[in-house]
Image 1 (cartoon, helix red, strand yellow):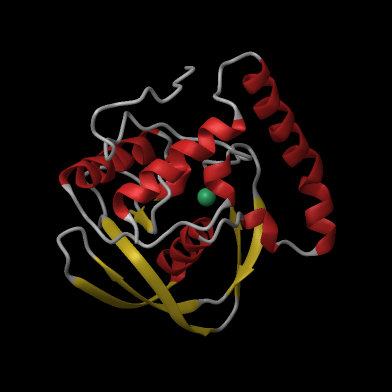
Image 2: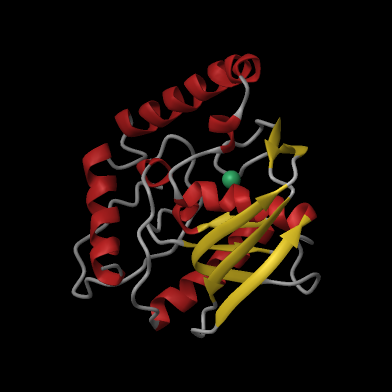
Length: 209
Ligand code: NI
């Protein structure tokens, strides 16, 4: 569990990935655009699909597995071999239209589910893993998942989008996530804050800017 990153010869290495929960610092900072897609990053994306399917999710942003990169994956069917697998790198959202309210949950906040209001339709421009441009006009569940994952890249969680009464309702849950996180750090089950941030900085330096 205590995976304190050991100094490796390869400063671009990506270790085994695992889901991180609020308030891990990876979730609370803006992810940086990826300027280099290498084999390690492609393998990490494969690992992200495994992790997402194991957790029965339909979308996963890189910073949910402590990778500080602007990329996320989606499969609205949530099952390997079913539906369409999307990888969106350096995504840009535009042309929000309409409004829809739907219940959302998040693998970084297990157990919390709330209604979230979002535009019903958006356009996404991004890059695929093999460097092809993607341009999609989407609605329904795909539009919702894309917007949820895009928020992650901005360092936001769906709980940041709740009206005041609902925000009060989740405040306690967020507090208990913070207590669990602090407890793990004090028992040495999670690296200290500065070590987690240093690891994010290292990964960022390897593939951004
Ligand atoms: Ni999420």
